[in-house]
Length: 162
Image 1 (cartoon, rainbow, N blue to C red):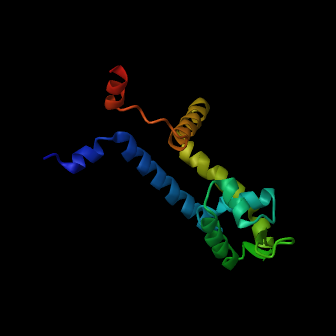
Image 2: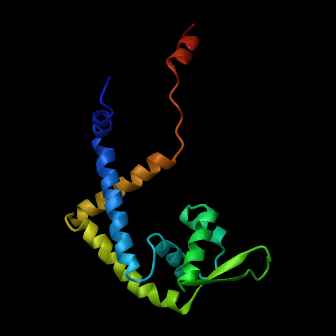
Image 3: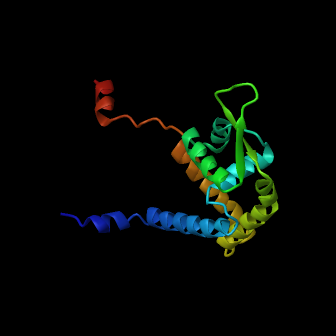
């Protein structure tokens, strides 16, 4: 019987990627909490800085998230004084999410915090390596989100040969 931990840890990519992802999340969380923002909420704020008054569904589509995820996050953000929900002007079933004054005021502060966090994460990379790393991560995202055709089974190939 094989040792499951040896099998699991033999995939160096997944171990290193998971560790880096966790470290980035923890650093982001610590950075944004200093400003009363939970990690992940900065992306909702970015959407609203670009176009205030979006519905949770519109925010979700722009960020590639589920609408209930955005609804839950905006509920927390409303309790923190970052956003407020108002009735949709044409559809009584919907609400629009608007920045509060505090949400507007955080724009410059959070933009600087995001740049500092990126700089910290990439500080050992040259400018060329940074561009390559971003390209590699984009490729990884594409590989995992683009449907691929399943390879044909050997049995299907034998059926064709007969």
